[in-house]
Image (cartoon, rainbow, N blue to C red; front, side):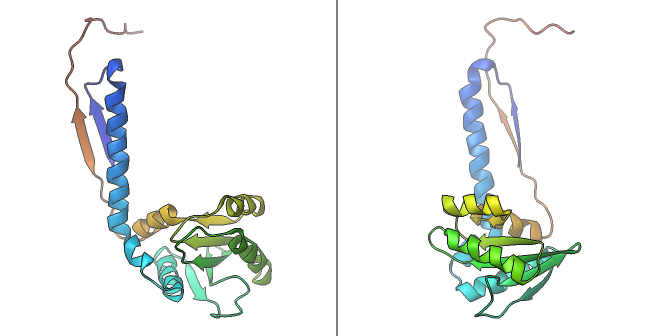
Length: 178
């Protein structure tokens, strides 16, 4: 989304903030509609794993699934550009806890991977974020997942909004050219 704001004076900063808020809201609603995130929220955990398997293939990764049980903390193993990444899929209603980060950290060693990701349709607790940061684990939350889904779809749509606020000049002075 490109927001073009014209006809704004310094005294109209509040209108700029309102325009930017509108832009954020429209962008978020566009992402929701393009990502099908509500359909993901209706999936089971195994359906979510399958969905991610397909999604990563669409994003150019080679993807293979691990066993459903006894997977040592990884649901998928994806590869791209000579980098192997283990992925743990967490379909959740609440926030994903630190346990998911602990499990994917172990999976990196077990599968001899270069990196680990935890992907959820939800969000992460602060302890999970902290441990992920320390262990260089990538956390893909709901918002990032929506972006990946949109990226996987062909064609980019650019929405352009032009907002022209009318105003009157108190003083007819302009900055001098240097």
